[in-house]
Image (cartoon, rainbow, N blue to C red; front, top):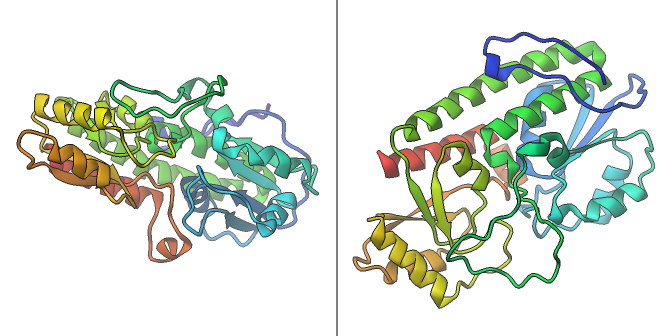
Length: 316
């Protein structure tokens, strides 16, 4: 294990020591491949305008990690890259085969569920959910780690350390970029904390629920139609009725959905409440961002800021 001590302006934004052994590496151009958008964007913020790194985002066509399958071109990019960063959950089972055929045997593979270790939680089937029929008894972990800013900080720490090792001549630049970025993330985290610290809330989702890490960060409760990783789109009548009754019980005037949803389930929940007057608010889970959106200026930070704006309007 390599050790570095780095001081920054905010204690909560300190870059910590990376873990695990790293391969010997020369000073040639570095190829980094990331699967999901948040990981790609974190890495992009770290490397800044570096000419020493080629950065690839695999899911740039708008797929989310639950239904992504790599193309032949994707497999080639992975095979020869220097650093491969992925989530490491149930949806990433294809990675095992991809790495078996890798040409670069010195590749540094970063499994972010392993990086987060004890911070990772199991997929939760909560009261009222339309649960999928599962025959596999293997533990399934919630993959949506990036929706916790606290988790984001830990992942950024690790990525910064690894990139700095591979490009040691520019490591201080990467540290500086990361620290500036972490300060911005910490400020947004504080805004979320302030929004909810004296105002505990329960979110009702007529949709999939990928925000488990988020609600745990801010001590929120929730009810939802499906788990975050569910492939279902049609909720049972029992689920719709349950959520409608919860909305009545809690006097909720908003039903939440996620980006790209047709809001069919959310609409059905509203139609089964007593008042039938709730509005629908959309939160963005950042799991289907396209290259075109990136070119238009979308970032992880802008998505999380937009989520804050939505929640502030609903709860203040």
